[in-house]
Length: 201
Image 1 (cartoon, rainbow, N blue to C red):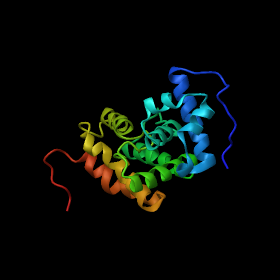
Image 2 (spheres, one colour):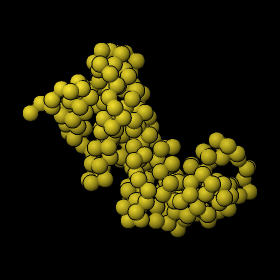
Image 3 (cartoon, helix red, strand yellow):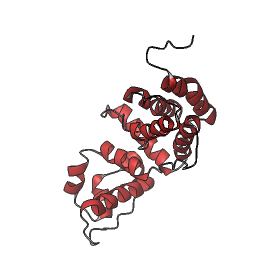
């Protein structure tokens, strides 16, 4: 049974401090009660916040959990020393895979189940915060090293994380073998293909 302690006597927070308090509280409630039993009232009580302040930012429980997942994701640090496009892609995807076995993995599994059963809005943003922005950084580094003539389109930038996400949704885990195949057989050929150049048969 979830802890019913009333946290509303704690200090009131505003702005980013309030957002952080709400997301941290939601993460704790999820760990204690799971997605199905998660309630905005319990999150508000733990965060010393009002339900209105939560609904103003996240209109439903699924959006709140999605925000928690992004908040708790650990972003990989790309090495400053010279690397390769392949190494950077492997680093990002392996960082995502490592987090599946951590609390964020449980958050994402709950989000997947809820999204499928409740026909929630698109899950396009469920990429550990490592969607197009992180991949754009990887591509920029490769372009600076001369590995890429130009930055791939947003569609191509999304391919690695979208396929990773689909694997996670289907199997609940992502193996290193899959990551290596994803990078070597799909991401690298797509990103390095010159415009108008035919795909290898």
